Length: 128
Image (cartoon, rainbow, N blue to C red; front, top):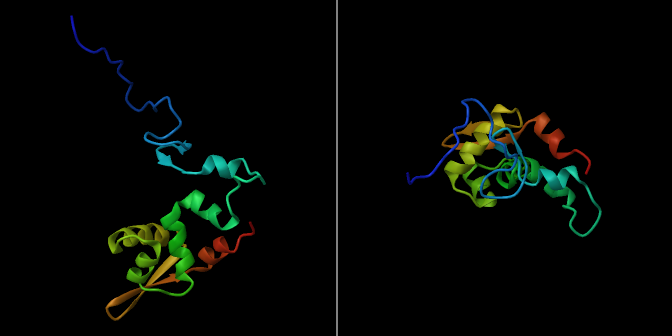
């Protein structure tokens, strides 16, 4: 009979591939970590990532940009503008960074300002 034959995957069994769909790069469980392969295989050649971009390789460009901007205590909307994302996107990333202990949000009237925690500052100050 005509039809496609699919092999069913057992529930709870991981996919056989360790790369994420839609793009290159290793994945850790279901969390894609873009650029982790380049970070793990450090090189000094022309394709080596600049030291300031290593945090971006691990966290992603937006989540790495927000703590960098937080040194100046910007509002969430100012940080969103500097990171070139919408305020709602920046807020979502700030939620994650705050839960991880890297950022604090301080309310000043109608504004919410970002403040880097000691752990966040230590992460940004790691030697390259």
